[in-house]
Length: 112
Length: 115
Image (cartoon, each protein chain N blue to C red):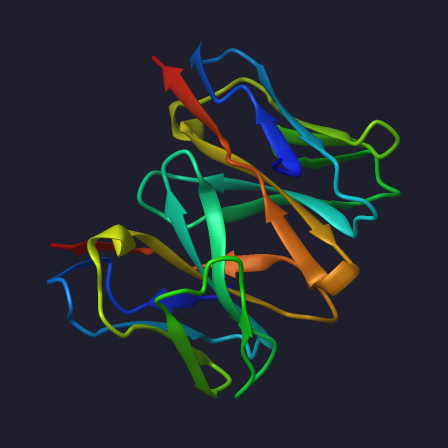
C-alpha cells in the first residue's frame, strides 16, 4: 500500500477558478511534507515544505495546509492560470533511514 | 539558483547497449539521487548517494549501477539496456544541513527509449 495517496488523479478546471488537491499519508513519524510542481517533460520543482509543527504555508497563489493529527495535507491554488497546468506531487520524508516517499501525483489541466 | 544538469534530454538506445546517464549539480550538495518515473507509478528510487564515493540501493536497483567519483557528478549506468528500462530518468540533489536543506532539486530529466 502506497504510504502517500493523492487525490484526485486528475482534475480539469477553467482558468481563473480555484482548486484544492489532497494528500493523505500514513508515514509515521515524518520529518516534513513537500509539494512539487512538475511541468510536462520537466523535473519537479519545490513549491512548499512544511514540518509537522506548521499548519499552513503560502507561495504566491499556492497555499499548502497540513494537519499532522489526521495526516492530511492539501494544496490550494487560487485564481488558476494556464501555466498551472502540471502534475502536483506530494512528498513525505521519514527520519527512519531518511526515507523519501512520493505520491503518484495529481494531473491538473487548466482550460481557457 | 541551484542547477542540476542532466547530460541528455532524449536518448534512444538498442537492447544490450551500455548506457550512461550523467548528472551534475553546482551547489556542493552532499546527497544525490536517481529516480525513474513511469505513468501510474510515480517516482521510484533507483540509487542514491550520501556523499562522494558512497552509494546505496534504492527500491528498484536491479539492472542499474551508479558511480560518484566526484561530489558534483552522479552517473547512472545501464550495463545492458532492456526495453523495460524505457522511462523518464530524473536526477536530484539535496543539501543535508543549513538553509533549504531537505529540499530535493531535480534535473530536467532524460527520456530514454530502448528499442
